[in-house]
Length: 108
Image 1 (tube, one colour):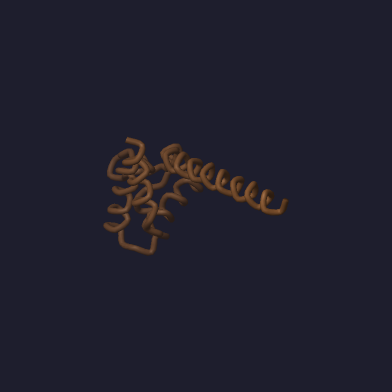
Image 2 (cartoon, rainbow, N blue to C red; image 1 turned 60 degrees about the vertical axis):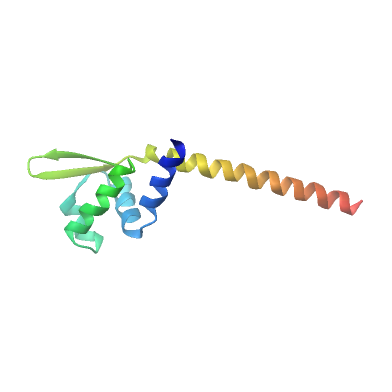
């Protein structure tokens, strides 16, 4: 389950337009599709497709208000990504510690 969530996150954030949309929502708060489209550099249908992918990855939440759909970032959804990075951070720290120990033994 964690791996599937991480895979969805990586795929969703792999696209620069989606990263930009997520970053804008994180930085500027809730926005309508129209407001997001104005600065996205792509058409409204493309923004909607990108938002759907972000929604599937649980990176954004939407709510309807009349004819408008409002989106907000869900930064807590980055937790599987943070966990993955922590795992590899630990891996590399261990490897560098082993290398340091080896180099110290070689100096003696």
